[in-house]
Length: 134
View 1 (cartoon, rainbow, N blue to C red):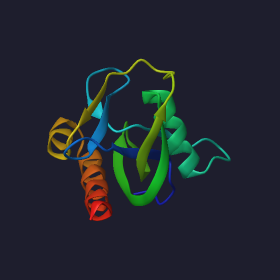
View 2 (cartoon, helix red, strand yellow):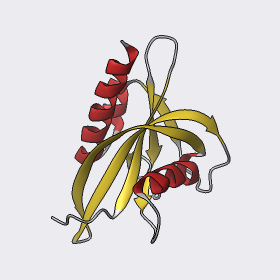
View 3 (cartoon, rainbow, N blue to C red):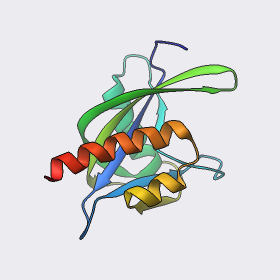
View 4 (cartoon, rainbow, N blue to C red):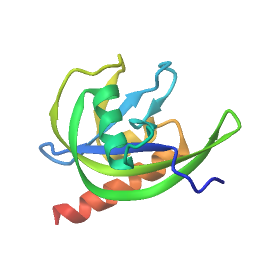
């Protein structure tokens, strides 16, 4: 698989009364549940791309807490390498895209996510959130 990062994405959390909630969004075609992610534009850092995609897809503003692992998958015979980041929600704005948003606890979010690479990223991020809460 490619070693070049092509995409950046976010595992987004916010506190709630009993446990953190994680953001899951509908895919652009509405057929799948995914994490916010997209192409890294020329001259853009992966961090900036992840936060931009989060604003565009979900209307969520966040701050990066940690860098997660790079996930790989194939899409239309192309290698995709996604650098995920753990992001804390700090506010909201108007989304550029019309997607459905769900804030779910860790288990429900993992069950909702369609693709294995997104589930791996969410579980990795949730483990860090648990350590931060101690």
